[in-house]
Length: 64
Image (cartoon, rainbow, N blue to C red; front, side, top):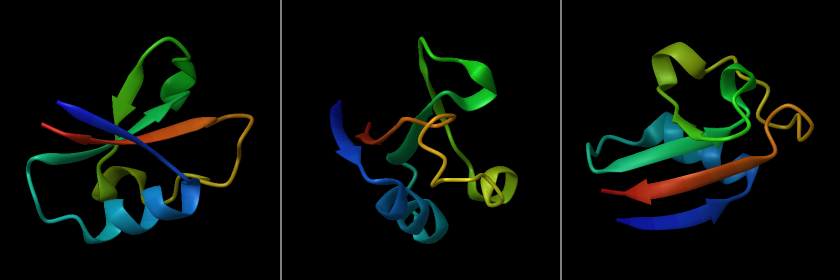
């Protein structure tokens, strides 16, 4: 597995246009979970405030 840290801007763009099953956009702080990264899904998370660094401090792109 490959993990790449993303800016919030890139995380949102990749999540929006990702059509590959092996690429996953992950978020720290989702659902107040600051211990593990959680996978984001565009249909469910398109209204997420990607630019709120306090609530969502870290995004990663995973290649699985």
